[in-house]
Length: 588
View 1 (cartoon, one colour):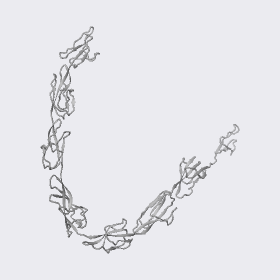
View 2: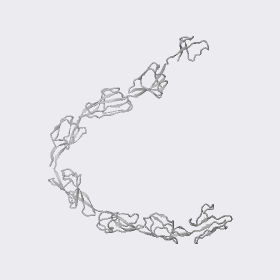
View 3: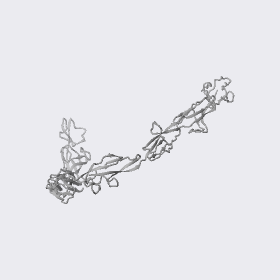
View 4: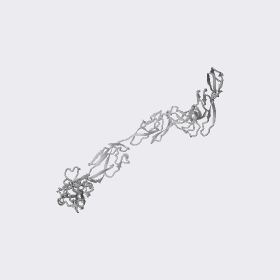
């Protein structure tokens, strides 16, 4: 702002006169209406551009602009492997973004204002390595940055060829045209390689081996070369049938199981291959001899090709004598002694002396071991009771007479073979028995008697109970003039009753008590004290063994109103309805 300019007036103002801000006029002399117009001068702002360096401020360039002009943030000096991503504002005024705001290089329209400091921010350029496999299988492109580890293990496949390297055919950046790289390309993390590039596969025609398993005429062939198959010499007792492919390279086009006759030829093949001769061999029938008491659980292979093993021998069981177990040792080529035949034994003259000259049949014999079975005897419902009965037996054991066991509070009622105790009790396990046994002990709870002696009180009937019952002792009997102090057991008791112990009337006892018991009522005389000191000067004591009649004391100037339970005479005592207890004190 530069001041105020006079643009119109009807007094003595001077048109075009410029007055600065805060101008002071004389008190007299100026008159008339006036129009003043603000006068402005445009401001020039500065943008300082610094190098991408956080440890120092290195000034690269300075730009100047006004609010009415635009400005251009430059793209920066080109750097191999990098591009200027943006400018970062580190200090600013006016309408620039706050400190650390980001701006991409380019032109900015008029309207911005204020000074600013910015720093270049460079980022690594992402480059692409493309692969031309020259007829091989496709390899996807890969990306990399300058200064970052490059590790390329590209392994395309091409029938009949072996990859020997990669040639630069479309170079970019620092890649060299026609340079041939090995099949594995690797650069450390400090390399200066940059730029997009296309690598073309370099192939070498493959040479493959053909191996006649067991023959001396093994050779080699090239991709698409015609292969003629050798003739195998004859083997006594066998007829040559054909050559069969038994293995080859995974990448080859040989098919496992393919067959070729001697003298045949083929072309278009590639990859190492192994062939084996196939001979016509006899098939031998097998007879399995198991014995009269054996059972076949799983059948065996009925026949086998000469020189091969038996794929599945029979699984058989044997039950010659009850009470014994028989385990199959295996199959032998003779009824006595002989050779053990397994699934690994090759059927030929070397392993089976009994193989007939005709090579048509063989007989195999099963053989077992015998062991005495031990059977368990399990006892249930025993709890903590001592049990002297045996826990096991065999078919050779003598007769076992089962022994009774004891249990507190119960009588033993026998051993049963079921938990519902149906049928007859088991008394013994006979000799020559077999099989595991489960025996259940049966018990009956014993009934015990509780006898109550009232000792002058009302009669209480005896009670019956068992160890399984929860008990409630009899309510107290009634005896006039006495208070009930409890049921007392004697000096000696049966079972688990406490001796010389006092129980409360109607006391609840948990289940588990056992034994007969006699309980005697314990009594205490009721003594009443009359507090009559205001009348006679002495306390009066009554013994309720006789008839109790309360006196009516006299006092001059007063009428007797009765006996009370408290000195304040608030609780009236009625001898006809209220209970008299031992130690009671009454007040007139």
